[in-house]
Length: 221
Length: 257
Image: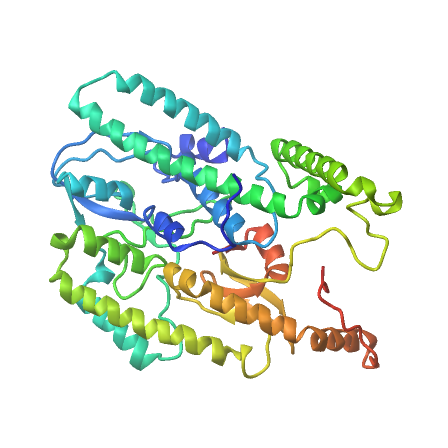
């Protein structure tokens, strides 16, 4: 029970948007953001995915129950429910796959510090660790073992070059402002600042847009 | 397993998103409320109008269970108005997006209107803004305007307020005017000419227009940044040191991280 449920009880006229719709908005936003951002974003912390998974599970059970019923009316409802279920599952799947693609690309980067590790969910962390271990073992057995020992590392940061490849945080992204806010940006010739209006769409560097997105003042599009 | 797509939504993904837009339907048959994952649908009682997501409205339309009410901005008069605004009154910018947060009056509590969506926890954005329902304002293009217009013209041509060919022609005109603006905007906004202040304002642009130009625009912006990277780094150093930067590091690919 959250504050909206309480408000709803006190004031039944209040037209609060149901939790399901808010969760769908949150999931959609997370998916679009993950598809557009150059780096891996934080795993949603407020139990969004637990809620969504529970709902999908109970919906699947409902479909299984309804399939036995041959009444044409429930039949149509069943088609609608299954269509929606597929759409929902596509969102979840695409979101997770977009994350895996980023983890695969820069595994060592996301495993390198605790702050970066905390962006991964438990399952993703297990996947990344195991994936990297397998890869390292494979390299070791195929060619790495014949190198001198001091050159066998895959994550050397001591020399002039960092061996850990990391995403380009300055790449440009499209953002939409969700409220009136000050936008500061760094450019080649001058650093800009503007008073952004709710609903504006801007192109910014991800490093400038990130604080706004994390505060919820903007979203990626 | 991992998604083999480059960053940024593809056209198919944008189309998927646009199908979540709410549209208004006039049901022809009764249909009880269905409990969906995104919330229960309103019970359909002909001839009372109801708002449904586009994918569901299309399903009902195909089975001839409902008619779709086209959004007011898709009427020829509104489109003419928009084309006029885009070409004559403000040829530099995209026409403004719909005014944010429409207010809704309460039937049961007259005089007490409140924003359609309140609560600080989640701020809603398209496709959850009801920009394509019959209650949407005319003369403003919502974020998913082109996708919704094309879908409605393809699947609900008989529900349109004017012959589908006429509307399609107007939509085409609008697309072309705006595409030219998009290309001109990149040149004018400083990326290729004047000073680069680090941002570009594209307010009013549509989702599919963004998807179409994403590769080009972001490529240009990122390319300009890479070319100017050393100039930018030396400027920054000068600003920090109060103006006595002389020898700069050429390799500043990862500055600012």
